[in-house]
Every structure is written in C-alpha cells, then in structure tokens.
Image 1 (tube, rainbow, N blue to C red):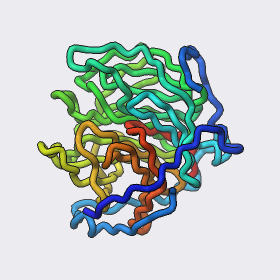
Image 2 (cartoon, rainbow, N blue to C red):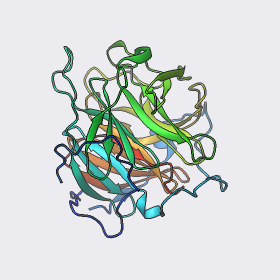
Image 3 (cartoon, rainbow, N blue to C red):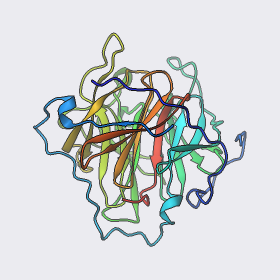
Image 4 (cartoon, rainbow, N blue to C red):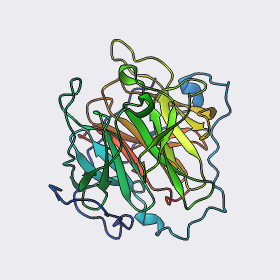
Length: 325
C-alpha cells in the first residue's frame, strides 16, 4: 500500500460565500448548545490494491432522467461530516474547505459497554436534515444549519443492528428516498443491509451482504444507487490497516453488484472512516495518523487525490441525493 502523506491543515470556520447549504427542515429540533493544503495528489490504479476480478468495476455514469425539481443549486449541496468530538462541519468538495457548524449536544445515554457516547455515523436527506447514530446505538435528528439535536423514537438494537453505517438513496429516480443502514457487526451485532423508515423509525432487514463485507459505510445518489466503503478482512489484531473497497449494493437484498479496490487502506478499528458521493467522485475521510485525511477517488480512471485534512477524527459523512452527479 502506498504511504499516505500528511498535508497542511485546511479548516475554515466562517461561511464560504454563497455556500449556505440546503434549505433546512428543522421541525422537532431544539437549539440547545450549538456552538456557533489541499493540493497534493498521487495516482492510484486498481492494480495497486491487488487483482479483484470477481465483480465488474464501478460505473457511476449518471442517469439524465433524475428528478431535480425540488433541488437547490449545486453549490448548496455540501457534504456534511461529524467528528468523534461532536463537531459538525460542512465540507465543500470543490475547494476542500471545512466550515464549522457547531457542536452536537445530543442526549445520548452511557451503557454498560459504552461509557462515553459519541457519534458513529451520519446521513443527510434532501431537505438538509441529518440523522446521526451514536456508538450507543441511539439515533438522533440533527440540523445541518445549527447543529441542534433532538432524540427520535428509534428503538435501539432492532433486528440485532447495534451500530451501523448510513446513507440515503432515492427510490428509483426521486424525489422520494430511503435511509439505508449497514450493520457493522460490532459486539455480535447484525452485519447486513437494512433500512429505517424516518417517519415511524422502524427498521427493516433487507439481507446479508453477498459476498460478505465488513465495516461498511454507505452513500447514495439521486438516481437510486447505493454504494458502500468497506473492507473484507477481519480487523487486524495488531491494529494495522486492512484493504479497502467501494462497491455498489443492490438495495433489495444486499448483494454487491460492482466493486473497485482502493489504492489505500481502510484504517483500523476504533478510528474514523466515512465517505460521500459528489459530482461523480467519491470523497473518503480516513484517520491514518490521528487526524482525518480527505481523498477524492475518481472511479473513471482510478486516481486518488489528497484534498485536505483536519485534526478532528471524522466518523460520519452525509450528502443529499440532490448533490450533482
């Protein structure tokens, strides 16, 4: 695996011009406690990560018939990320800048196995509403405008899903969408594909991943596709990085229908990893050296470009299905 290079920190804490984010639906949210280098690249090829010829490679060519009548302009569709210290940011892929939105103050409860509740993963819907699952298994609704947080009626550990990756994907070509989850199998929990109804907060089990994948994060698109960022290997007992992949997932049953290996590893258990799809490219957030390195993976030619980094450990990312394809 090529050695990752550290870059100068790029962390912007003021609004960036017209990039004000999606129109926000803050219904049901409180306002308790919200606080108000990039250039450097290397090319990677599929061969860098070994031969993976069992599945076809990713094809992310957009469908021109996507419904976008309810969508804002492209610059309003940012990637939103949450760190393990509860900081919520927006991230603008074009110039690699972070904007601090605020600090989450979600009413998460410690458990016998989790003494310090912290964000685990995040997804963002078309109206700019974020859903954040904590390492306790609790699911919260978060404003991407203010970082205000509210509890949901979601019952922890439905179907054996304790903690999970998350991502929205449209139903066919939109504008309706579904929140999908990927169980990470932690502490014996479920590790397949599921979905959560964001009105009733009931979980449905859709199927086991086939072939098996582990530690999957999810991101979706406006033309109804769902992708996962994952490894296939067990967590290395020494904490070493393990090979990473991005695959397209059949939303009906969890089958991996296409896959591309990445020329960099996924980080070890307990560190952050997240990703989102924006403008035809994947943006990965990994923490190989304590902070987070942001890389752009371009599936068309297999290149990887270092975009930015931050001292925060990012554990979740969400992007609207209105994002440019």
